[in-house]
Image (cartoon, rainbow, N blue to C red):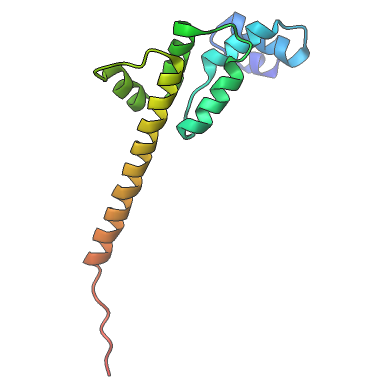
Length: 135
């Protein structure tokens, strides 16, 4: 209620707000709560395996399957991975394929970042002046 008074409400719609109230205070339709959670879940900094586990937990009981479930998954994953999957010559056709390919791309991306960081440190170290010992 305090958030409403100061105008800092984080809900995009009255329906989303009502779902949250029902979730907090009971009496809510569990399926409706699951759908709202499914529409809000995002990968953020989690690796893909972690995100998929959370996504599956939220999706369970939402009633979503097939194409609608894939659409919610696509909305939740990081933009770069989503773009690569959508631009692929052959797009995944099932949610399992989306999960599998997204995991592979996420792993490749994280490995690439580690390699770039390793090479950057190596380059910085090679520029550092060598220590000379005076005898």
